[in-house]
Image (tube, rainbow, N blue to C red; front, top):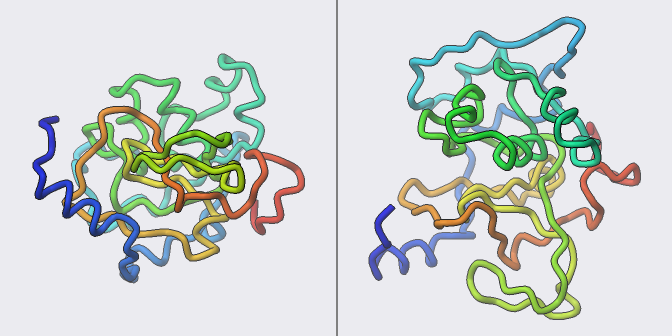
Length: 214
């Protein structure tokens, strides 16, 4: 992607972090309203590959939600085999896992979560377990802010600097922001900003996580 112009950077910095109201078609998608994936029932949705965009996320209504809080604790091969290859929607933790472990073309099989370019859909809401990482003091965020000793801790990951994978814990706390359509992608994969400090300062899948419905 071409380097953003000065005007684009200014527009990006002015809007990033400014909440926009959720439209009804977004707000109906809550983790608790999805059926959970059951491997014994093989309850996967119908893969409809001609959807290049989905302004109305309801086209994926029949897709059940795959969650596995212990995914990152498993060895890579077992973890990959545990995730259905298509026809499900992924929670935020699993979404980060497949981004790290599947190529960009494979991401297209999860069409409830990714568009046909392999980018997370702007219409997707945070679901299930959050994808987060622990950062020590002295770590710079995506805007150049260096974490102080007091700010060190767990932060939600942002894919390409855009989509914040805060999971149900962040959404329940009112932290979700609708992604402005004009934002540009950062060149790397994962970023964070100081405003993305996790509500639950525990590792993903920690049994003491108080988030309801996980």
